[in-house]
Length: 348
Image 1 (tube, rainbow, N blue to C red):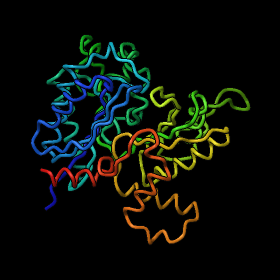
Image 2 (image 1 turned 30 degrees about the vertical axis):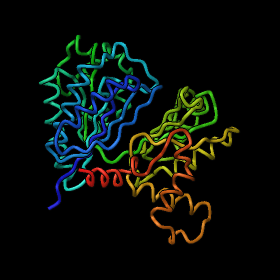
Image 3 (image 1 turned 90 degrees about the horizontal axis):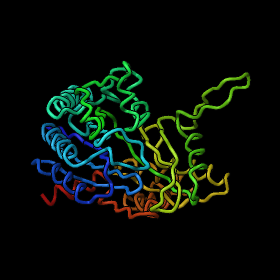
């Protein structure tokens, strides 16, 4: 019988203090049976994404210890960063990886959130498959106003927390958190050789499913849908890379994935006279998505005999065609989930 495995990908609002980043990693790995697969920190975003995998009970214990350490070490009243955020542990998603269904995972995630709220005094919201209404299913809605707007937001009936209690002291220090069950998500940034985020944002609005709001012919405003479904996007400038990025969350890679997003961004950027400098993966990616994106791009470049490409060749083509190593290293054994899991299990 397959051991149920759950992936957890918490996004923590600290990307510059290496001691804090490591202390949180140590809290996660202090639980037996936990595989910490990746730590991805961004200086400009001031944010770290941890990716770990574990059996059911262990994944929740590791996540709980992560919350304890973040509550101890992070003070949101002093936090600044380019990425939208609402708390010290901004969001903590759980993904049913193997041997467990979403239906089985959802109540366990809810139980965990209430434990965080009751034991630590952290208030928060459920999102994605744990959301209690449509407004809260979308993380962007919950983050509106960010940490700085929490005091006023929490006064509104519609934004009373789903778990935990509102303690002014804890809200000031920690903010709130967002917890939920979701499917596999790929965080993927495409780099523009441009030092202004204006065009990056224009491209983001044109591509993302939500689209943009424009003036209506008869007065008022209307929302125009974007070009790709199951894609969220925002544009920003990254000083550490000296370029702008279109930052994507690919929320259903069966609908649109890295290959589709990269090629469309390239087309739109060139219309503005801007070239790309590859892309950046944030966190990790399933092997199947790397292989699928490589095939997608090769087909559209009219490459023949794609079926003769080995897995290794396709991985290398994906890196080459999307420039995944242009601004920071992309190491397949570190960034592809299945490869890293295999290495961790072999060394255990």
